[in-house]
Length: 459
Ligand SMILES: Cc1cc2nc3c(=O)[nH]c(=O)nc-3n(C[C@H](O)[C@H](O)[C@H](O)COP(=O)(O)OP(=O)(O)OC[C@H]3O[C@@H](n4cnc5c(N)ncnc54)[C@H](O)[C@@H]3O)c2cc1C
Image (cartoon, rainbow, N blue to C red; front, top):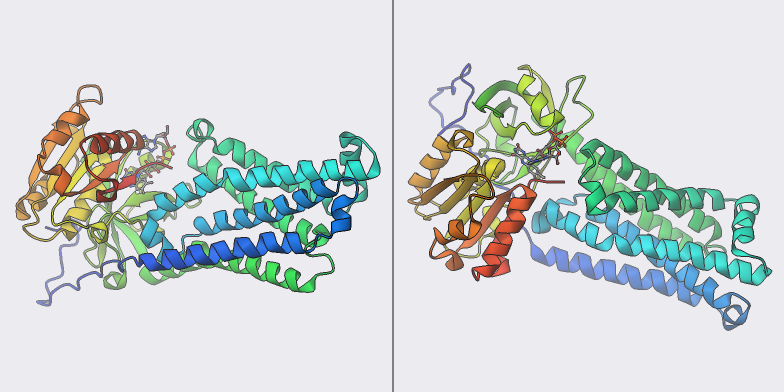
């Protein structure tokens, strides 16, 4: 089964086309090692705030608040660094947790650094006001007017609080991806401001060159990791594989497939179910990168993605001209056959979630008897249906395409179409609401959480 562009049929040199390499298997021990390092770093950071404190400083007016303020500041900025590392896309960690897993950890952790840094600001204002026998507002004014470095700290804190407020789910889901991005760039600036503020005024650093050096190394290493994995590696891969659009193929009324051509794609290690952040280099689109899964395993020299038009970016892709250059970031995602623990698999997907499911199917062994449940709004919206049917048939599996809107199609009924669901790994993919509802149904059906692997098509 192939997806080569209609205009350029497969080259028939007589030689077999090179097979693409699968993504390397995740190594969960690396995650344990990373957790130990992060834990030790946290201990050292908190320790450095404790050992600089003396009994007489604690007994002075505002002394306890001063100590707690320094402690919360150190702990908060350290945890902010960990948050940055969680989204820096270190490949070895990303392969274990997947990008959505990393984002979940990032979100779960996020209230801590923000609360600790806000507590730091309040406690220190209180402590200084106590020591100078002034009010809180007068102390705040004195900070701004008399302490160099304090204004930038206040600006940094403001940016952090803004990002935190906009990260609340009900606010975030109304934002466009680009707005979301801009806010997060502001967060990097806030952290840079916090770093220089700490070195200039932090009791753990002023007069302590060793902690200054260690702290600077930790921050520089974090910045290095972000630059390497978020900018360096994508730039290298983009230049190496030189992807360009060769065909835009309409699949259904609102879905198109993009076929891209590149060089050395047999060296690109990617598994079915993974995705890239794609940046199409046209005057209108070059500045935004969006995640789309591969809708088939690579067939060097070609790749394919299949996109449903839901907003400005996804709709614009139907108009791309052949020859458009494409920059990539990835591959990302742990939604691959590496996640399997059982002999048999079931795949449950909603709508355009079929893209990752379709590529994943290709990686499942022949005769693996996959059970595929695919919910679509109408049969006409079932993009790539013929290919999915063929892949399932070759693996001696079963395919149930269930048409109807959310209200009409009960997921419970859908889940019962696979009687041995509990004995299978279950891969779930699609829009957020669909994945969440399916996970709940699977839990209710007695499928253990470790057998459920999912990819959510949402921010
Ligand atoms: C890991 C991953 C893999 C993905 N793979 C694919 C893929 O293979 N094919 C594909 O078509 N999409 C895929 N998506 C979804 C795709 O990234 C978004 O649909 C796209 O980025 C939306 O950008 P936009 O500018 O067109 O819409 P936006 O302007 O960002 O959004 C427009 C409106 O559509 C809503 N919306 C956004 N995404 C979805 C969605 N998926 N379903 C329903 N409503 C949505 C938004 O909430 C908003 O109201 C994937 C997403 C992720 C996270």
